[in-house]
Structure formats: C-alpha cells, structure tokens
Amino acid sequence: MGCFPCSGKSSKNLNKKHNDIPKDRIASTTSDKVKLNLAADVKKEASLKEGSKDGGSDHIAAHTFTFRELAAATKNFRADCLLGEGGFGRVYKGRLESTNQVVAIKQLDRNGLQGNREFLVEVLMLSLLHHPNLVNLIGYCADGEQRLLVYEYMRLGSLEDHLHDLPPDRKGLDWNTRMKIAAGAAKGLEYLHDKANPPVIYRDLKCSNILLGKDYHPKLSDFGLAKLGPVGDNTHVSTRVMGTYGYCAPEYAMTGQLTLRSDVYSFGVVLLEIITGRRAIENSRGAGEHNLVAWARPLFTDRRKFSLMADPLLQGQYPVRGLYQVLAVAAMCVQEEPTMRPLIADVVTALSYLASQKYNPETQPVQNSRSGSSTPRSRREQ
Ligand SMILES: Nc1ncnc2c1ncn2[C@@H]1O[C@H](COP(=O)(O)OP(=O)(O)OP(=O)(O)O)[C@@H](O)[C@H]1O
Ligand SMILES: [Mg+2]
Image (cartoon, rainbow, N blue to C red; front, side, top):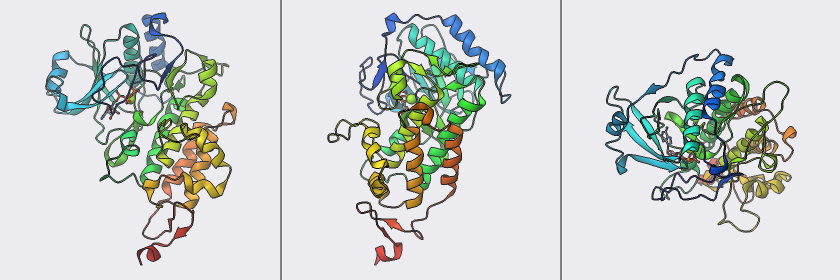
C-alpha cells in the first residue's frame, strides 16, 4: 500500500517495531491535522467507475472476507507466513480455504481514520482498474476494527528484493529481465495515466511497489496514495505532499502540485535503480552519491561515463547501445522541469522496443565495466 503521513516502511525489516517513523516517508502535514471526509472520498473515487474509458468492470468486483477466514488462511497470522512489512502493516502469505487459492494478505495497522481512508482508496481503485500490469485485488475484510486487503500472490516478491542487498549466492537480474520489468511497469503506469478516466496519478511509484510474478512479470501495487488526476483544463491537483524520499518529483515536493509528470519522474528514478542497482537514496555511499539522481545527472552528459552507471552485478553483460538508450530515457524522465519530461506513452514505446532487443552474452560482446571497452565472449573465455 502507499504511505501515511510520517509513517512507513521498510518491507525488508521484518523485526521492525510497529509505528516506527521511517525517515524516507514524507508528508507536509501530520495525520491529526488532516481533515477527512470519507464519504466524499468514496463518492469521488467511486465516480471512476462511471468514466472508465476501457469499459472495464463497472461494478466493484472485490470479494468481502470475514476476519475468521483470513486468520484461517494465514494460520492465525503466524510469523512463518510473514512476507514483509511496509508503512501500513504486515503482509502475510495465505491460502484461502474456500478456493485453495494462494494469496497475499495485508493487515493494516490500526492507525485511525487516515488508515481507513487509504484502505478505501485502495479497495476502490483496485476494484475499478484492471490491467495485466496492475496487481489484482481479490478482496478485503472490514470486520469491526480490522482492515485487511487480499491480493493475488506475487511469487517473486518485489523488485526491490531483486535489486538491492542480494545475498552473495544470488545472481543479480540479467539485462533482458531488467528491460522486461521496466517496460511492464511503464505499461501499468500508462494505463493509469492514459486509459483510466479520469486519469489516476499513482504517486507512490518505487521498487518495493513493483511486484513480480511468474517469469518476472511486473505489476504495480499499492494504490492507497493514488489520486484522481486533473480533470478539464486543470493541469494539476493540489495535495499535501506524500510519497517516499528519493522518488518524489522536486516540484511536487516544493509546491504540492501533483501532475502526471510527477509519476514520470518517479518512474525515471526506478529506471535508474534498475540500470545501476543503486538505491534512490543511499546514505552509506560517499559524498555526492547519496542521491541517485544527483549522482547520475553529471554522468548523463558524458557518454564515455555511461558504462560506469551499469550495475556491477550485470558483470558487463549488457548491450552498449541498449544501455545508452535506456539511460537517455531515464535522463529525460528525471528532468527538473516537468514539461520537459516525456509522456509515459512515449516511455512505453521506447522501453518496449528496448525489451524486444534481446541481449545474448554468448554471442554479443561483454563489457569491461571499468573502462567501458568490450570483450567478445570467445576471447574472455580463453
Ligand atoms: N501481493 C503480494 N505478493 C507477494 N508479496 C507481497 C505482495 N504484496 C506485498 N508483498 C511483500 O510484502 C512487502 C511489504 O509490502 P508493503 O506494500 O506493505 O510495503 P512496502 O511496499 O515495502 O512499503 P510501503 O508501505 O511504503 O508501500 C513487499 O515488499 C513484498 O515483498
Ligand atoms: Mg508496497
């Protein structure tokens, strides 16, 4: 799910105490100042279904579960069923007794009304929006105080799990898989921006919210922060600033004006993470390297430095031309000036092409990641 003001995250830290305030979450107001109007929110979000351009579901398809059913599915939320934990609560793997289906169940922390609002937005958004690159909401539970969301189980976890802090015995993602994930995630975003009516601004695009299914098929998850986009002649919606440090577009962080281009910026950051294997914010790195975009910007201007940006875990196994092209896309997405960023539809076109150009390290040159020079496979093996 998305994020609360001043609450959140680290899916990896399973031992994290509840209610820890994460440093990477941002919000311009504290939850107690936030005026909520749940009825209006639901009405507003529900109006989506009337305007859905793609003729998608015109009824809320999600199933309602009792708390008992979900407790049974997760063996009473047993620790060994825990998949991860984010800003909203814990995610468990479970099996529904009625259908035998394996699912992921997110149990929301009881954080009061704000949590309920995000819960409603998530249920409504996911009930009304359907695309192969958006995670499926199977159902939800709103028994008494309990708020749970039931999703399709994504067997390969999140993109974050495959890019960062890999155990030494695990191989990094190969080039082709990275391009496939980038293109698929862009298609999910394109659906939200261009096919949904009114458009949906996702607002929380980041690696932990890109989930991976069979064969690394990517799906966007967590719509609790999504906003119905500008309608009519408006170019932006004004909102309090929420999101995650490192992914948030500069103009949105400064003015609270949210546009579709803010999502394109976040997408650019994700794309940079996919290429470089670096985190959006990494304070353990040296001076000038904490912020991925700030580190990358000067390198974008010098082609000879592009090879320094390739993830060392690729071990030089990438196409030089493909690397240049994908870096060019990332550079355009993270431009300071929002109007200079491409539309997500153009990003989809570029990345779909790049994903279709399969790289084969057996037959194509492998790069020497330090110098940028290439070595044919046959020579390397001698
Ligand atoms: N549908 C799913 N299938 C499989 N694993 C999932 C699913 N949803 C979430 N997870 C796992 O649970 C972890 C926590 O997810 P969650 O969305 O709660 O937090 P997050 O994305 O890390 O942070 P945030 O709260 O900021 O979105 C994910 O990183 C992922 O590993
Ligand atoms: Mg998430």
